[in-house]
Length: 375
Image (cartoon, rainbow, N blue to C red):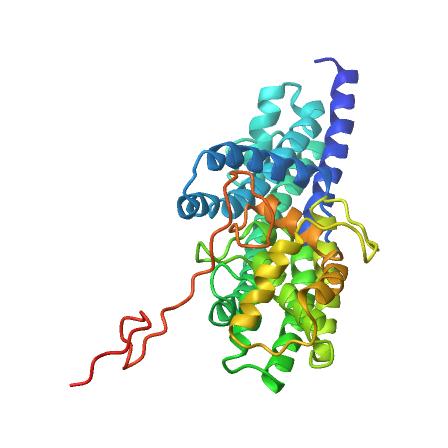
């Protein structure tokens, strides 16, 4: 390789090193949720490997188990992409010193991994080797230090999602949550519940926008999903304000507002188009007949309502238009559990019905509704 080409290669290597370093800093150190071109390409590559395989698995529990490896694979691919890009960059930077592409590559790998099995004498080569060694150590150390932050945010998220199983069943469904409030979490406890989920949504908006890889981490149980959980809580708050406007606490509206912000922020970070100010009477995917099914669930348990379904529907739609499209897009992107009122999935199929625990009592141990005979 002539001298001019070696200098051009070195300039290209310096540019690649700067761009890769910016990707590392932007992903691991600057908490602004900015995903660069490199990380978007890595995410698309990993997703492209998982989607065709998972789409062929019709059983959701098996598909969920397969997709559970998506986030760890993305983390490994992320680290590998940085190491490879820096390796190529330092190989190009060493071209003027070694004069041979293969020797430059061997020396770059030797320096980045601090193996020291090859080196070239000279000021420039020594400088590049030192920078490569420091870079390799720093990138790997930052990735390791990054993991506790991710798992701390993941554990905070999943604690509330797990607690929701008792209140909303699995998969979570908004009307089911409100129906179960009839059995003991009305009043002050429901106010505290909406307040807790307002804070939870704020936490998710910050942590998952800052570290987008968290979007790919699935819940430990197949029928649980953070996006479905948030959607069900927002649906419950929207139904509550629509059917019982005077009884619904103001915290329900605050929870809805924070939920809007959370979903819009995360959708934007995932590259999903966001309508920040939809019209209240705009179209939604959920039908009025589906809404009536949820309304009937409340009536069946004697939930106190102030409006008929015809009166409540426009109010509920006015709330849901603010978050439905973003929630459906996120659920589709992550192939979340196909719960009721949560939109379509890539694999197709209908929603999974909410699982309710059997109501066993001493008089009805089989939960059949038949009383046990005395004596």
